[in-house]
Image (cartoon, rainbow, N blue to C red; front, side):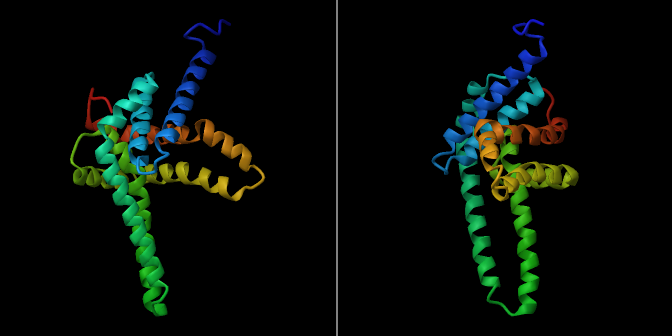
Length: 210
């Protein structure tokens, strides 16, 4: 078995792993200012979606291409999501002061809004990476994609949230989880989510790159 043969499975696997590691590192570095998390997440999804579409990409070049092109839109959306989450948290505190009957009703309402906000956060950046449009329409499209395939929405949520949950609650294996996150955890999550997202997006454009 010739490892350097480009058709060799191990050769292809390590090339793929190298791309995920590179994307993971780029995402973490570009997310350090916090305000840029939206743009870096869009750029990472741009690359993982292209991996599903084209099978092979220049990870660094593609990442920064999307990062520059979608920086303004992604940053505005990210700030909007942060503000919305902060308002939701304030409402949660306010609900605690209500009478028991009203508190129960508003708790359910806030829970529903919180779930929708979480799903929007998971869908909006890959949608920005895939389609050129105004922010309002991108948000509407994201909500449409969420409800178009509810099973996909549940899968994307589970793939994103469950590993984070186990990382936080499993103190014994925390070093292992941390190592995986630092190596390729974020990009691997995006790649897994992109399997579902690419199948949602594919019918809406033919040869256009995501």
